[in-house]
Length: 498
Image (cartoon, one colour):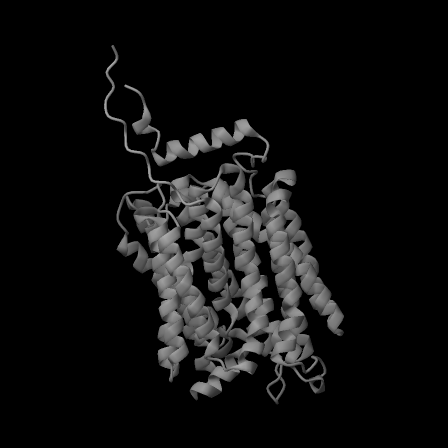
């Protein structure tokens, strides 16, 4: 006679991964729009808040600074406390920051709102982590590609939508509309998205977080203000030297910490550091193009270049970049299975070089810029999606949030560097009337071409994925991948028979 004990309680049903994916897509799209909606309308915000040009640029810079600091912190907290919980926190912060910016009657209040929005920088790494934890193994690569495409294309789409929104309503609605979408996304994430079963116990290293904040603030502040203060000014040199010193201290503290914010051993993984280098160099080009090309297009032809178009039309000219970036990001999963994520990254970067070459030597006609934007969308769509997949595949599941967060963060830092250097090159050629010369733009786009070439060279050093991407029909590989995922989550330990 066999006596059996009481049956173990059934685990609560998990939300279907497609429902989770829908919520994550809305959250990432709204976050991406907030990155760029303000770029083409900074002069309008300047007039509305009665502030100076130097001060209003901090509406963008303050957000980048805050996102640079909070992105890896939120990724780490997600690994420790639960990715769903921290995703909700990030979405609430984005909502509150958007509401505060929408009602701001002074630039100071708006800057506070933008800093709060920066906490939402954790949306991207937390979304990648949830996909890794919740999706079937063969679906991870494609889902990561779509989310990465949404993040990249959404940033470009923000520039396109800014003009019509301001024309139909006013600049306050650049914050009200995302606030409404983000509030719904936060509620849906709380109700629908399951909490991650993979946790990394520990505490946040506050000294490391403080040093990370300090060196990022010094670096981005120095680079952002260099066009105004001068690259040779004592303040800029002091900030950049301070950034290097603080970054060195941060690396030492992290290396010696039993619970580092960023695991330096993980950062030495070839797939991680090489992909991060590519992200830095590619970020230089993407953010600089979106920041300066609208200004070039809106310049009146009397300056000897430009087309004198409106904010809305300049956004529409940039629209093909966002469309093709999203399309090829969606296709990246299928292309990765055929070529491999590393080869897809290299091909995307080689295609992107053509964009900057065209902008350097052929931008006298609107169709030439349209062609450059199509090519940029194709190249960046493949490159960004494959970078995200390489990082997710290259680290243990417990470090997905931190690794993808740092990759996104380095992209932001690269964007800050690219926009600042491009600004310094372009404004150095300004006429007495204040408009830059055409040769200034030529030199600036040539600099971006060199950065794209350097990114393509760096991509050759990215190692091949440590595990192949499973094919939909490969049942054995899919089962092995799922089993490994359950072992990592610890869910098999309690199921062993005695």
